[in-house]
Length: 110
Length: 117
Image (cartoon, rainbow over all chains, first blue to last red; front, top):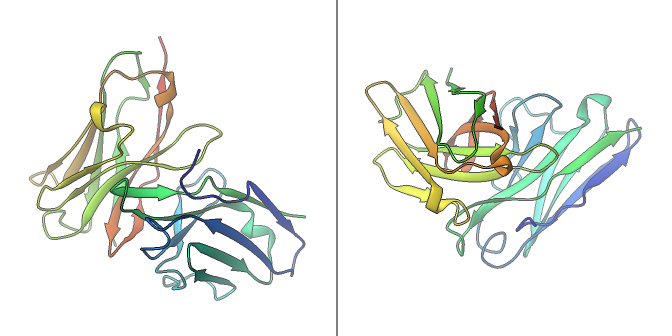
């Protein structure tokens, strides 16, 4: 059981916009910024969004993040087949004194 | 360009101790930042294991604290993970990562560890 809750799966068609949600509590999302990681099949996780809505250099602006209270969302617009991956939200948890992750959302591009 | 590379045995016997090393290239781990270990069991999500500050302060997952030790070897520019009394539940891909300004910005490629007799 993950501390942060994500839907296990999401899907969309090429060109579509989709969102992935992630909910937590006051000791984690409510108190800290959130990061999103993208894990393409057979590869290591890659930082996709940091500090709720910032993109590292090289990440297309099709990817965006937002936060409200104890929930965050990742939006992907102009969906591409190359976006098929597992997506994880993550933040620090004050109660556990460590990093916590969502269970991951597997994105399928139909 | 900063790169991290995990190394260690691919197979560990139950009840034994797992030892992994992360070699960092392109940045001196004695300069700054946290350095951490994360794992991904087959069919499951990411799980944070431990982190260590460049000055030596350590943080451990509460669920693994009793079995895990993280350490730095600045002379080799490496940091390591030891996990004792392993079981099949510890079978996973283990990743090392750099923790900068509250984000894991650079990850190693990962190393698969199987716990089996």
